[in-house]
Amino acid sequence: MHTNYEVAVINYPLMDPRIKPADHRAYMQLDYTSADPWDVPIYIHIPFCESLCKFCVYSRQIPDSEKLLDSYVQALKKEISLYAKTPYIRSLRHRAVFIGGGTPTVLSGAQLADIIATLKNSLPLKNPEITVECNISNTDEEKLQMLCEAGVTRISTGVQTFNQKLRYTLGLRHTVNTIFRWINTVKKYPFRDLSIDLLFGLPGQTIKEFEQDLHTALSLPIDHISVYKLAVFAYVKLYKELETGNVPALPEETQLFEMFSAAQELLQGNHYILESAQEYCIPDHNTKFWQLTYDGYGDNLSFGASSFGYVNGISYQNIIDPADYIRTANEGTLPIHMVSHKITPQQLMERAMALGFRKGSVSKTTFNEQFDIQPEDKFGDTLQKLQQQEYILNGKTKYTLTPLGQYYQGNVSASFMQSAFENISPLKKKMAVGMHIIPEALQNEKAESDE
Ligand code: SF4
Image (cartoon, rainbow, N blue to C red):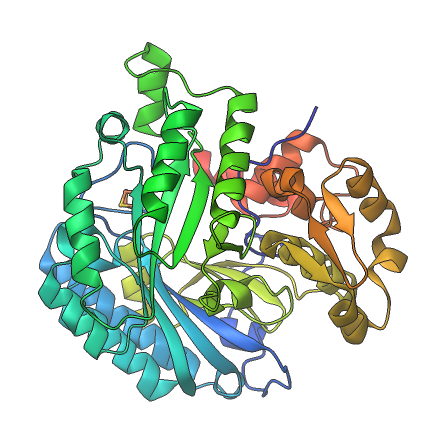
């Protein structure tokens, strides 16, 4: 029986909300320069949506005024400038930007262009790949043109499914024909890539229906497809509808695995390349942002309320509530909610393995160059167990996830977080990974949220 981590392993080391630095800039040692050779991705979070999808687990709000959005953009610019003033951040090699959410396109074209211009003016960004996640409902042709002129190179949108019946079940607003028309409009502009998200494991979805979604995606001029399994958490509206039987039941685990395998076979059989456990792209259209985010070695800089980052050996999450985030940034203070301890030499290796497998493989050469030890000499037992479980393959130059390992990628990555999980029950592990905090702090966090 597998312990299924329904959560994405996105960062390591895990954080400890009990650490309360008086000065985050000093705690992260941002007054020194970095000698790191790694290119760095920048993530910008816009935690607002026009309406809330009934399956969504992400932290987002419906903005109650234009003024709030405007204040949020000003706070983001302030946060960027606070980091950009530090020698450490200025010495990094920033190469890819991803503006995600939420729904970044709740902002106007001018506001998004303003954020991009601030990044370009304050950080040493060289020919960056710039992605903006767009919602069809608030991204018209005029906004697309402004994004193109601002230097955006990738457009990404969450289609979820092309099946009209399932779109209705999920409460998705647009018809399939609207999506097709919008894709045609995007293709009028010279964006390098168009990316879509598809979900599988929807209520009542059959394998045939999911395969039809994949065939439809393959018939469109799309460069990148992310395929995610729907995870229904107890606090989302869809959970209640499933409980009361208002919507058909979710597919069984065996069907889910069949859907996952169908995506692998169909997409790879039609010239798409597997970019990570969940991402596929056509040749030469790899996403720099995802590659850098999960390289397992370099920093991940992030801005915006509730976003997660990793800078100079410290994982951090920003303040979650947008109003608190805006106030703190305007006070001239880094708007951080919680941090980890400084990463230890052991955790650096654990991070390389955990994030490397998030991307799909771990290069033995890079690991050895970095740490002067082979992965099998450090993690021999774990690697052997994962091979026995048929989750990974031991190749000449790298360890690679098998199709089964891709399906259980969360388990594979979490099995390397060893210094965080010594003598910890599987349930506690799952909670800790889901909340991004060390198991010892879980009790505290619960007590604080109960107050
Ligand atoms: S648009 Fe995306 S982020 Fe916003 S509620 Fe829907 S799924 Fe969640």
